[in-house]
Image (cartoon, rainbow, N blue to C red):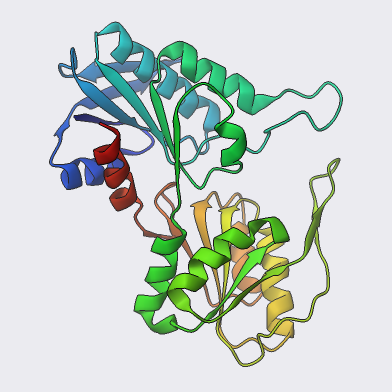
Amino acid sequence: MIVVPGPASLQLGRKVANLLDAEIVSVYFKTFPDGESYIRLDGEVKGEEVAIIQTTGPPQNTHLIQLFLMVNTARDLGIKKVIAVIPYLAYARQDGRFLSGEAYSLKTIMSLLETCGVDTLITVNSHNPKMLKSFKIPLKDLSAINLLANYFKNKGFEGAFSLSLGKKATDIVEQANHVLKGGCDYVPTQRDRLTGKVKIDKKSLPVKNRDVIIFDDIISSGGTMAKAVKEVKNQGAQKVYAACVHPLLVGDAKDKILKSGADGIVGTDCLQSPISEVSVAPIIADALRNTS
């Protein structure tokens, strides 16, 4: 297998290639003066299985166009099979038409990936993996929650209480609790479909004098996480950490969460950020071994 680390995932791609002891084909990329993307695969890929590793965080549109160009170029160059590894899949949260006339963005992205020539898609903690599996491209949706939980266990937080944001995400903290073994629950949330704002509902939680880890798949603006941290602190929690798979951290998100009382924030390198302490390279490498 050949690994192609895309412009948005250079470090992660190299880590995966090292774990697989795989050949790397580098990508030469630049931006033209008018803003268009230029891509060139700097190596031979004909007849090979190729894993293109490219996350699609901000700037999402640029990284998606780079991905489409890399996949379609590899297909034109005669590859045997192309596996798109997209640790963070942009537009995945728009996984339906919630208001009349809305774009069903995820459907459009998946159609473009299929048209460009993706044979298999690997993601990490996608927003709605059940919806992704309804499309034609075979999908592997990996979970980095155990990696995050083990990070905290190794830091001395075994026995910490695990919390998710919203009842629908309880599967996340159930995974974490298998590692931390301190019990788990959820913070009730409600999202306004028109404004997108999230409200935290009151709920008594068994967190007094305990260390708490609040797990989420994505931290974007940080507003919901900040509210949850403040609520848990108000209920007497000792140390409170925020943990996420996809640290988008838009604007002042990091400062907002820390000012709410969080003792720290930890994310993965699905998106490279100042809090990317945990690498998803091992689970991606394992998935690629089982895919080829």
